[in-house]
Structure formats: C-alpha cells, structure tokens
Image (cartoon, rainbow, N blue to C red; front, side, top):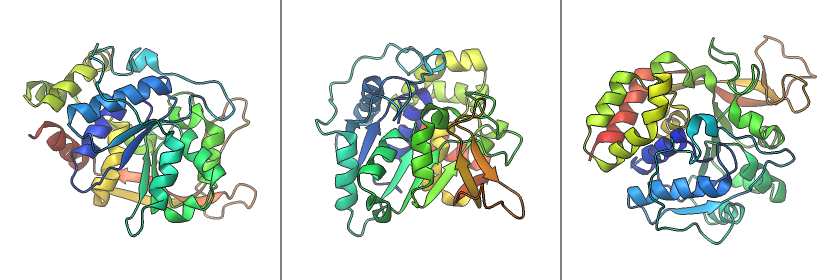
Length: 306
C-alpha cells in the first residue's frame, strides 16, 4: 500500500473481514513517501487493535524513475490532512521484500495471495531477486491499470495511464510478464459512478459511532467536500478477495507501455478477436464488471459494524 485515503479504507476492510487472514502489510513509495505510507498503515493496525499484523517498509523509489506523488489529492499526510496522532507501533526492522519472501516460504498449504493497492515496485523487486516465488503464490490481485473495457477505462494520472502503473511502469511490466496468476481491478470498474462513495453514504458513515467509521469520516472529509464523490479503488481490490462472486473477469493479452512519449504506463489490452503476435503479451484476468451496489454494501457494513 502507498499510504493514501483509499489504501486506509482498504486496510480497514481487509482487517475486518474474517474471510481473510492478513499476515502483513508492505509499504511502498507512491501517493506519499514510503515512511509516511508505513505510518499510515500502522495507524489503521493500531486503530483496529491488530498488533498481530506486521507492517514493513519497502522501496523508497520506483525501480528506475523519480517518485510520483498524489499529495495534492490525498494530503501531505496521505490521509486528507486529518492531523491524526502518530501511532505508537513501529514498522518491522526487516524490509518488506525480506518479509514477502519469508511469508511465501512458510506458506505451506496456505493459499498465499498478494493484494497490491499501490505501485508494484516491491513485488517486482522480489520477483526479480527470487523468481521461484511466483510458483508459491496463489495469485496477485492489483488495483491498477485502465484497459478500455468500459467507458471509464481511461487514465487518471495521464490520458492513457492509471496512477499506480504510471508511478512505476517498469515494475508493472516485470509483474505482468512474470507468469504469476494475475487479477487486475482497474479504473474500468472502480470509476463506475455506482461504485463510488456518495454524499448520502458519507453522511451515514459520519453518523456511525464506531471508531473505525469516525476515522474513515475524518480522512474522507476534505476529498468529499471537494469532489462530492469518492472512488473506492483500493477497497474494491480487497473486496475481490472477500466476495469474488461480485466481480466478472475476462482474460486479455496485456502489455505495459514503458517507452511511450504520451502513453508511458498505459496497460495495452488486445481486445481483438485475433490478437497480433507482436503485441500478444501475457494473458491476464482483467475485471470487466462488478456488482457495484453489493460491493458497497459489503464495504459499508464492515466499516460501520461493531
């Protein structure tokens, strides 16, 4: 996770979902610097009293590029400039890369998944250092990309590219070409109006008396005041693991553009009946439809229930 508002909301959903056994949280450079991303993860872990879940810092920069930030939207603290107190918990001394490897080696018969809600820098670095890890993972679910499957499947950082992929396209290319079972939840579904948090739903969150709902209301306040709606990008990627029946995927050959003058970070999906050999790419599962109302019902219930 890269420390933004929707990352925090996704962590609340993950940690309050009995369907998931969360081993740890890896922070990465993205919306905010990696140190801030780790602090924001620890805030959620502490809020939910989940000291059993470790938090570790990953890489501080993309593989070959300068960092891209989104603090103009998420705030200088990544959480809507909400001025929350610093957590008393501290991140693990080991690097996120080391802990990902350890978890994969000790998985045994567990079905180990990685859900990436930020740039893919950490995962790409692990795959590069230890390619065998790909076979030990059940799957990797990413919130990232825009695949042109719906009218909303266009870029948000640039006209062609979604933020997480654009932030480190070289890392995304490594992951997309790794052979891992990859499921992509992109802007095609997360930007659907019905999947976004409405003013009425935000008002309901504000009225809830639970600590985690009040936390969510506080970090959402500026964004909701400015945008009126809030796209639940990262919570939707978590929900795919919590309620997979709500999401419909289709396999496409996808390439990540790393050299384009105007299209760097674009996820180029070949949707033709007869894909060209030159642009074939690995076949990956891309989300093309989601039951938006049911998704939000799951999210809001987990957020506001005691």
